[in-house]
Image (cartoon, rainbow, N blue to C red; front, side):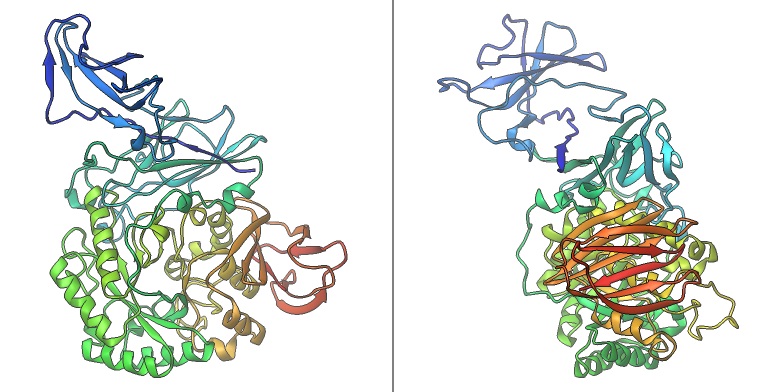
Length: 610
């Protein structure tokens, strides 16, 4: 059973208008203010009180009052800093009783994990670091996996979501949701004593533009800070709290179409962004029964707008729509890729979106925002809201974690916010660690929001020739592993790392599976696994169940699966690997006990479909 707790960071909000109560006793003479709760902060005594309404017959308390003094004689009334409406999780009514603010190390809340807990955490980057000074972009490796508490990443804390294991007693996932332009994104700051506290963005983010502290109108709301707790990992993997507690911020301008597509850049890189190569990928997507093609960076220079218009027209004739890549800005990092200087300005952005709408572009991929400041949250929201006006879906890369955005913004499709597939093109080390990382994402990053990973490649080598003659990285996982990740990694829009040559050099059963696998799901169930070692879960699309598993352990994993979602005697398709990672497909009937014994070799996978 899932347990959920909401934790709020309470700050002292000074009001612009206040008045002084000079040397009087009692201190408050014009309100009914029971349950006074004093707190000393920087040589000032702050007094929080309840507020009983004048017409109360019993208790009628909807907010708290705040007073302060520096001499214990003259008191300043600071208004109503918080009310029951401030706390989105609170039962609204007359229950603003007996408050107490507690300070610890300059913060008002914190998380203390039970002694002996271990961590599964991803460090926050130093601002204006990494590729062309685009960090923090949530593209760092997990550095504490089953590690002790009491660390602080690379000195800058950890990105949400944060997973902890409470010895053998269960699991804890801490995250936040409901972040809009009205606030900033936060991180978790680790202390030596095992305390973790909410941290605001770093001053250097966004090239120093914008404040680190959010501005909030009073009475106001902070985002949700959520804790998901489970005796097993099932409540963690299956949680929907990130979406349950938020609401849409505007109506969809149309019914948006999600689906699958292809993407030349992940294998062919910048050289693949040509008119002729995008024609080839449009034909490839049509052959696969896909819905889209993503045209990546430099298209404005290498193809041109007239070329994009012709590609869009040709794609439409094939039942395919285009997504176009855009740089987020022109000045707050050094990334040279274009188009630039469009998405960060209202006039240019809306003019561009009107053009895209006129030629039938389905969506945009906006890259390299790299900040959690409120000013960047405003940019995210502005892009999404304007795109909705023109019927465009939005994918973000080099970006922050989506915090409830699938429900808040109806045209939001997905975000990267993970060390994604491109790193396997750039580094053999990333290929070698592919299984390890893939066995973390379903337990952590992908639990709280759509993850645009761009993977499931069937190429053996990360080059357009798919051979070893070009100096490039080599995939060490199996084809069944690639199929499994198309199920394990959730995103309603999937641009897979498949290539036209896969129609002839990949196994037919693998291609057929990638043609049929859905990109949207109705239900998820955790079956077995351990973060960083192996994962087996089931996803349902309409009446079909897809069970997928992968293994990063050095030894073969053997598991007896209980599959109550599939009827006894029902025929299932099973995709498996042998010890040499050679895959095959077979069919069998599920036994009367609805059980199936499966084996998954290291770097291999399994997929079961009813």
